Length: 102
Ligand code: FES
Image (cartoon, rainbow, N blue to C red):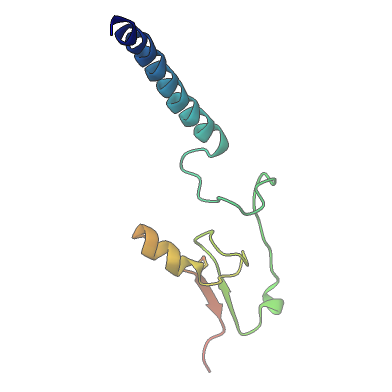
């Protein structure tokens, strides 16, 4: 019985140190891979800045641009803002550029 207690007294601190080490390592790796506060999570992450340019003449009568950074068709809106708003309580939506109604 004394030997079992001794094993427990040695194993418990080792397990606690290993668990704490794993926790802090995961926190460190999370901070490195995704900086806090980034809006863009997946669009052209290898680029230093995401910029798109369109000529007014090519837009046509209506264009709908994403402002939530969740669209799979970025920079165009694909409706992904709806799921984002439902999941987060956010209220983001697209930028719509259109010709005036005659
Ligand atoms: Fe981003 Fe619609 S998908 S604003």
